[in-house]
Image 1 (cartoon, rainbow, N blue to C red):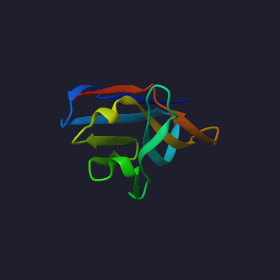
Image 2: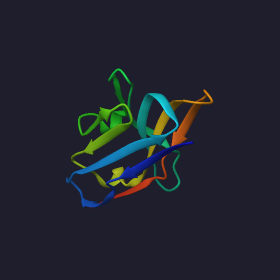
Image 3: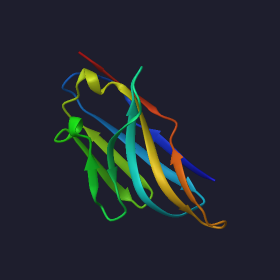
Image 4: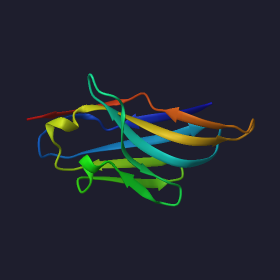
Length: 120
């Protein structure tokens, strides 16, 4: 099938920076939109940032000007997080909209989640 592998989470002080990466592999023909979502305890999962295959980006208002999403290649994205705040603490999930090869189908695939903790 298709797998998303995330890396780069961890513990950082408020005002610091972190970089998350997500790499997709498997039975991939193409990927349209990839993005990052986050979920903190007691809250719903929310969109942080997304990027299309054409490079169009979308950000949550709460992270605009602080976070930058980029796409290294067709199957890999990064999220640069600057000026981190305690409210950014959450599990961050990578998501991809995948068109598979072989048996052609469209899938929404999620990564396993990467914990980001911002200490104040």
